[in-house]
Image 1 (cartoon, rainbow, N blue to C red):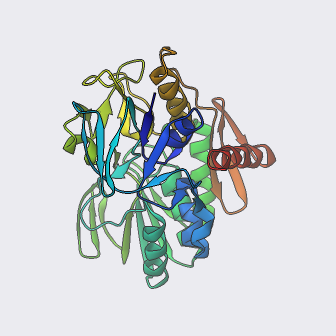
Image 2 (tube, helix red, strand yellow):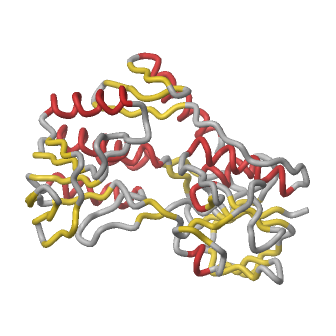
Length: 320
């Protein structure tokens, strides 16, 4: 049986461990949680790991689901079972910059370096770390969050700690504040206008547009799958990682993507089980401080740093 996985992110590479053949147009695996470090240091290799030689490196144009073949730049590739694991994209407010790729991270570094004021939209882990790095680079920084606290899906202790550490650095944290539009350097919010040279979006995460272009049933460009990660449209197609969700919702997370990629591959092999996931740790960094939630409990210091390092190790093990 030939199982093809579209996309060499966490889910696709987890499926590869169980025999799936991965197709990806890049030459390397991106560590999304390390893109902020690319901005901070200017070193692109911090966030990328070269793929193994068995990855098929080509661009996917479309999928013929009836004929069970993937149409790519190098020709047609037949499959018996298909795992769609194409990651995420960002739907940003016009006038803001995003950070999905290493190239975008390097470009953002240049733009931040040449600015005086930086605004970051979204107070999740990425937004918090972007605020810290921008402040470390000597900028006046605004962190704008629409909800009543930063890191809203994490513990209240993590939210409070993030806010207090950023404010100690001089970051202007604005919660309960929504952005209506950006006109040049002026950001229009529900709490007045802000001027910034660079506006960065750390929110608006969704599936890639190719999901809807393929004609798959989707929610916010995330293909809809059942409890077994099987496509609601085709019995021989599965979805895993950030590009897929059930009606009950699957969070967009590297840890969950690895679990989903593994389960999708096993189910494609006939070992049918419902998908269930566990979010072990969400760790955030501000300067030398590591903190976050481990199994739902707030942690900081050396234990949090260890949890973060274990996460990186597991991600690296997927590609070597």
